[in-house]
Image 1 (cartoon, chains in turn cyan, red):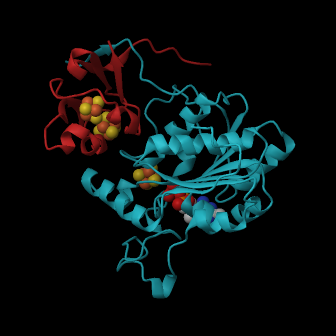
Image 2 (cartoon, chains in turn blue, green):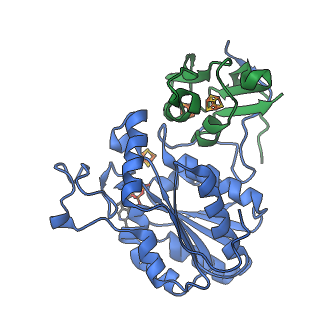
Amino acid sequence: MPSMLTIPPRLPKAQNPDPGASKFCPGCGHGMILKTLASAIDELNLQDRAIYGCDIGCSLLSWNYMNIDTIQAHHGRTTPVIYGITRATPDAVGIAYMGDGGGLAIGAQHLVNAAVRNEKMLVVLVNNTNYGMTGGQMAPTTLPGQVTETTPYGRDVEVTGKPAKGAEMVSAVVDTEAAYVTRGTVNNLRQLKTMMKRGLQNIADGRGFSYVEALSVCPLNWRTNNVDTWDRLDEMEGFFKVGELVVPQGLEGVK
Amino acid sequence: MTKVQEKHQGFEIKGCGKGKATWRLYTQLCKGCGLCLIKCPINKKGKNCLHWSKEVGIYSTPAVEPDPALCIACGTCERLCPDSAIRIDRD
Ligand SMILES: Cc1ncc(C[n+]2csc(CCOP(=O)(O)OP(=O)(O)O)c2C)c(N)n1
Ligand code: SF4
Ligand code: SF4
Ligand code: SF4
């Protein structure tokens, strides 16, 4: 039965077909989120205006994933690198793609200030409740009781506090008339695509800051099989509420 | 420069979606994660539609394939596959 197919795999135009299989582990949520982002860029026809930045962390494995101009920044510094670019190139649709460690730990100050200043950029923050690239240490988003490399007995909230809720934090400081803030999940990629499109359109319109958090899966460091991976994601959705938090006027029509 | 790849290693299962669709799997993309098996709506009903294949993927771990008699060509597996290893087309 192994044969050669003449019909190519179906990839979004904004995704680079040349590298073949991505550099992510089997079943990694980054692949689901990035292909959804690329489809959203296609549907809004933004490939020529888009500039993509990836962080240190597993997100850096996407340095050749997109078929758009790409820059790879230092850990947590993708946000300022991208708004530097969009300030210098106002027509650009700047996208900063990062993990929860990059965005909510080391890069939190950049995220907060970009949100407060209403920088015209989209932050896509992948919440997989750990530091994936470095071997699965506790992240700000690690769930109470979750076992990681650095919380071998489970995260103790008495010692390390409760998990950081990125979308709620950003919502508290943005200009609610201009910013778009939401949380999606790889459990619902149709909804995530609509959210990505709204976030992108908000930038393309020159209105304001967009933040799309995506609940994701990291089967490698979670040490989960396919059943347990989806179950863990359900548990995360119980803690991190999925849905839009701030929607400015003018985006209702973007589906 | 874009490389033009004219042939893609993989296999196809005809006759899905009541005989109206073809389901394709690219073995150089499938990493055998098995996440699609859990989300197939027919599998969720307790039937064995999407299952491990005798063919292997890029890491020599089993790829997946549907039972064409059960597959409704809903596109769920194609949409979620992190590596775009599945492609379904109406004939
Ligand atoms: C300034 C700096 N501090 C620490 C590191 C080490 N480091 C590399 S990746 C990473 C964490 C990545 O986790 P996250 O941002 O959650 O992304 P993921 O890998 O889970 O996608 C850390 C701490 C670094 N590269 N640079
Ligand atoms: S370590 Fe986790 S986040 Fe990183 S590529 Fe592997 S599965 Fe994805
Ligand atoms: S087809 Fe995709 S989702 Fe299914 S096992 Fe292969 S890589 Fe995983
Ligand atoms: S197309 Fe739908 S029914 Fe067919 S194998 Fe994929 S998920 Fe199952």
